[in-house]
Length: 436
Image (cartoon, rainbow, N blue to C red; front, side, top):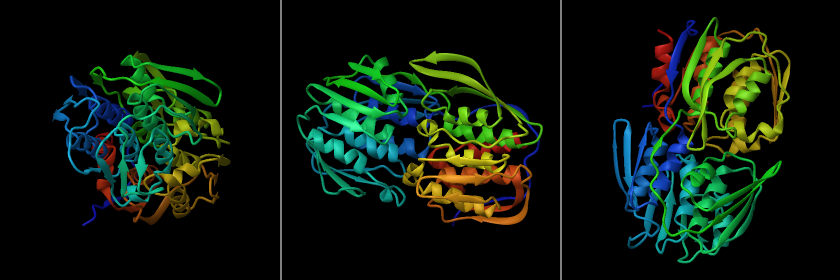
């Protein structure tokens, strides 16, 4: 039976401090990098979500030893070579990040690798990593979708590749494959989140980066071994996003979210919300192993204004656009979001779903294949019944709908409450603490 969340009251005013769980992108990358070291790596505050647990299960199936208890995770990897016989089956669950990146990690596998995923992931496009990995010498049974069978190559050759999508998953997959090649791989990559580059630098992996306005040139030399990585995972800005908007759209409320990753490639949401008139301040900023960390202070914000969102902010807000659209719905004027077709390549066709939800709450919008125009209504208040279902268990659709219910009013029935286990298992628990 599907778990259904019923909400029929707006959230009370609040003034609190919270922590959110560890960054999902960093958690998955830590697991995969640690699997390459033969020495013990230790992480604290690793996100205990389905996506991260899928990553752990995958590296265990490849021979890594893992202990995960309470807030501490230990991994002893099996180095750069996989000593298994026959076909290795890997289940990435719902995680596009895991599914795409791990293929690069397995580029030199002598085994056939069978990659599978859930219903949602099986519909997503894997051609963005298949194409460059073929250049290294890998062979595939498909052009695009799961299930996928890859046969690696014993001695991957270094490549030159132009990554045009701004896909950090594609870039990272190539970077992992480059580690196992003999020579230097060069990637010209459209701007995207740079967690992997920072981790590689911290581990003293031979990497050089030349930054241009729209692209980075990344050069990586192949290596034979990697040092262990001990890490305290900071909070996830994508998880914070829902509480930022909850506070902004609530009455007489303020919130401090502590120890959050504010990597410049991830804080498009802060830039966008501040441009729309939201009150957000960063406090206690510091650098931790290359990543920028800070506390985020946010207050209720009146007189929100529309935005013509600069497309150069798209990649740094790609996972937060759903909740940004909710702010646009409550802002004065018409907001424009362009070149966001990538949203339909996520766990669900998010751009299509955003338009559906805006229609349900009575907000006029015009959607094209890659853009959305939202006619904001600062006086938007709901007193009707709204049902959200059949959204492919997309965790961000569920969380956006929950924030809408708590700030706009109405009688909401939202299905698949367990979808949050993908990225943010404690989401509802934190909401209940704020609403006491």
